[in-house]
Length: 340
Image (cartoon, rainbow, N blue to C red; front, side, top):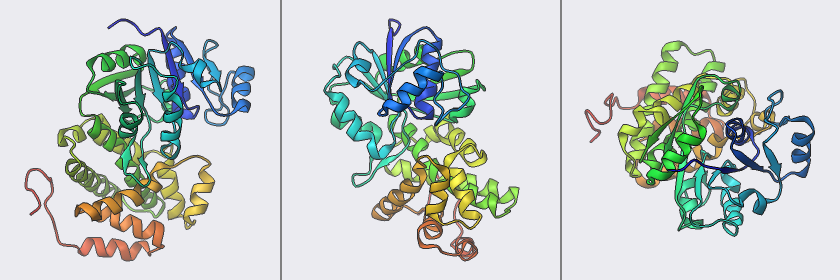
C-alpha cells in the first residue's frame, strides 16, 4: 500500500476537525469541507474552529473549503464526519465527484431515521463500487485534540483501506487498530450513546459507584445481545469499539450524551437538555430507533425500555428503577449461559 498523498474530510464538527488536523500535521495534503462560508473564513483568519474546538490551533496547511468538488479532487482517502440526519444527503452530493478507487470512511455514530441504516449501509447504498470502512472507538474529540494517548478501530472488508487509515492517522498519541467486523464496530459506537445518557442521569441523581458499575456492565450485555441479533460478532464488544467506547462515554462529562443525561437528572426537560448542549447528541434519536427495532425483533433490552420511558414519557426515575429491579432475574454473561 503506497502512502496517501491527499485526504478529504467532509464535516467541520469537532471530530472531523481533529482528524483533518492530525493528517495535516503529518505533512499530508488535507481539505476540510464545511457548509458554512463563515466558518471557513474564521478558520482561515484565526487558525481555529472556534465553535467546536476553541483554543485548538490548526495546522497552516489544513485547507478549509465549501467547494466539495475541490475538496474531493485527488483525495485517495475520504473521511465523512457528518451527523446521521444529514449523512445520506452529503454522501449523495459527494457521489457526483468521487471515483470508484477513492476510499471512504465514516466516523459518524448513529442510525438513520426511517430506515434503521447504519452509516456504512448508507455508504453502500450511495457508493456501491467504492471501498468503504468505519472508524470508531473511545475518542473524545477534545482529548484527541489535546494529544492525550488514544486508540481507535478502523473496520473494513478491504485490507488496503485498513492499512491506508492506519498509516495516515497513526502518530505518537493516536493508535489505530484494525477489524473486519464493520457492522459490529459501528454498532458499538452507535449503541453506547444510549447508555451514556443513562450514566449521566444516574450521576446527577447521586447514585453510587456500585450502581454505575452495574449500569455499564448490563449496558454491555444489552449492546452485544442486540448487535448479535443484527449480525455482528460478539467478540467485537470486548474491544475498543465496544467496552472501550462504552466506558469513556459513560464516565466523562466531555461526552455530549452524558451531558444530556446529566441535565435530565437535574430536572431539565429533554428540549432544555438538548438546547443547552448546543451540539448534536446522537443518543437521543438512537434511543428511539433502537427501542422500536428491539421490539420488532423481540430482543430483551430493559435498560433501553426504562430510559425511553424517562426521556420521552417523563416517567419518574424511581418508579422505572423499581420496575427494572423487580424484573425476572437473568443470566450474567449472555453467551456463557444464554437466555432461553
